[in-house]
Structures are given as structure tokens and as C-alpha cells.
Length: 143
Image 1 (tube, rainbow, N blue to C red):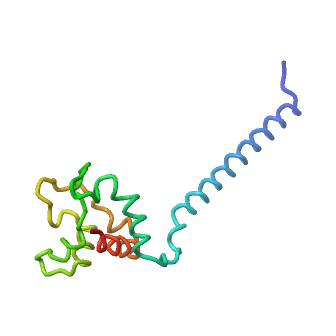
Image 2 (cartoon, rainbow, N blue to C red):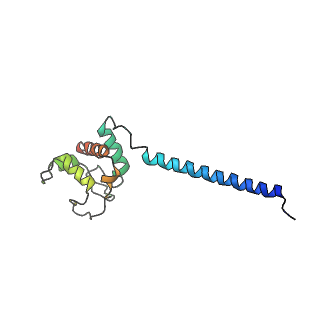
């Protein structure tokens, strides 16, 4: 059976509709990606840095670092008393400076029994400065 010009035009219209749907889907996908990537860029700093630090600790740190001095130690050392340990670091840093460095460069000083490279090395790039400061504020008050 021969295709008529009407059948050919319907096929052409069907392809155009499909192409338009694919284009719209691509535009929607690009918009969603852009919103996801840039949604945190203009957020105001949280009003309570300690609460924000606790939230960040729960999301990013708790899986490896316990606040119980006896453990459990899933991957990293317990952080119970980290504020006092940071204050007595023996390197001449303030407690906040020491904690900030440990977050940004976790292999600068290794805890005995824990190998280099265990903690993510990208937090200095992954977190906004206000987030790092919030995490430091929270860790400073951890007993």
C-alpha cells in the first residue's frame, strides 16, 4: 500500500511533536539542574550557627564520628570533648582555628590508629564559609 501525502504529513507532524516534547523535557531538566546547583548560593546565613553546625554534624559527620567518648567508632575517632582537645592542641592555634583546619585539611594531624585519606578532603570546597564556621561553633561546645 502506498503512503498518501496525508499519511506523510501526519508522520512529519508526529515527529515534530515528539521533537518538541524532547526539547521541552531537555529545557525542564536543565532548569531543574540549575535550580539544584544554585539554590544554596544566595541563602542568608542561619540565625543560630550552633544549631546549623549541629545540623551539618548530623548530616555529614555523625555517620563516622560518635559523640560518645567510649565509641562506637564507625570509621573516625569519637568527637566527645573535641572543643577541649582543640583548645589544647599544642600547635599554637586557637580552638576555632584548629577545628577549621581539621575540617578543611583532615590529614594535617592524624589521630593515632586512623589512616590518612579516611575523612573526605573536599569539605573546604563543599561547604560555604558560613557552614564551616557553624560546624566549628557546634564542635567548640561539644563536651
